Amino acid sequence: MVITIDGPAGAGKSSVSKQIAEILGIKFLDTGAIYRAIALILHEAEIQPEENILLREALLKIKIKILGKKVYVNDFDVSSEIRTPKVDKLASVYSALKPVRESLLELQREQENYGSLIAEGRDVGSVVFPNSDLKIYLTASPEARAKRRYDERISKGMTADYEKILLDIKTRDEYDSQREVSPLKIPDGAIILDTSDMTEQQVIDKILGFVHDRGLQKIEAE
Image (cartoon, rainbow, N blue to C red; front, side, top):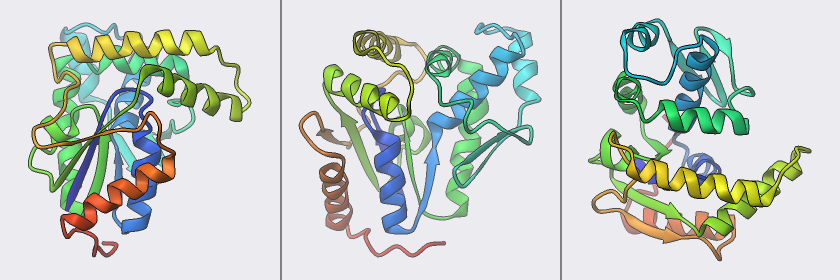
């Protein structure tokens, strides 16, 4: 069984997907973490976000592994480093490049070989797993998403500027929806869920209801 959750930045895809994976006893594939990791390493190696031979050669040397909540690049744990505003922007730029998406497509798809999973991202229902059993498109107003991201950073003791976060989200939405390679869009057959006025628990309950309706609820950990 494969469940996909797509949607714009700050829609709460990762948090919701993680909790649903735990409830159903299936794997969680954080595709965003994969793109963040690749962007971080390419940036640190001073590989410019351009389609050229240097980029392609660098991609051949990068090995990414996801073990539980940990993300490793060439055996180095980058789990904390990839969760910063700086890497947010880097991931958006590098993930728009065709060589980057092509190099990571099979890495994502092969995860299905290891059992049932829930995957979140921006093209998992449209490109990575187009034949998934349940497709969700999770969205919310830019203002609601900015407020959630602001609250999250404040709760972690980080400095945060709501207006700047809101501007970044609107800019990211425009960029992701208009890029040529795998643009953000609603996958065919997806259920659209606007969470602007919903709590996280309400979102989880709603999606579990969709799972139940599809007869997919009786999944054992594999």
